[in-house]
Image (cartoon, rainbow, N blue to C red):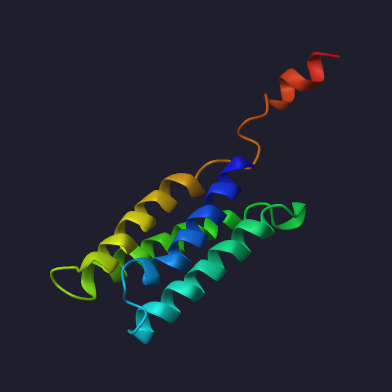
Length: 113
């Protein structure tokens, strides 16, 4: 489930990025980034629980929202919004990775015995 760990690490970056880009004085960016990072962590964490193992796919919607916010909030996008675009594109790639991508297929596991 390394994909979920990478999503949580990306959420930590998103939460820290207003301080890196010195945009913590803008409450919309500060609280937006913190709440989106929390949502990403919750969805990634829920993927560890078997009944909600596909919750990480909802991160695709969050990523699309981040890309749209970064692209259309201010034109041309300042660095903090460019960060939203890059983080959103990165999350689009990582959210598609299955939970057990590093394990061999189930058929191989059952026939090995």
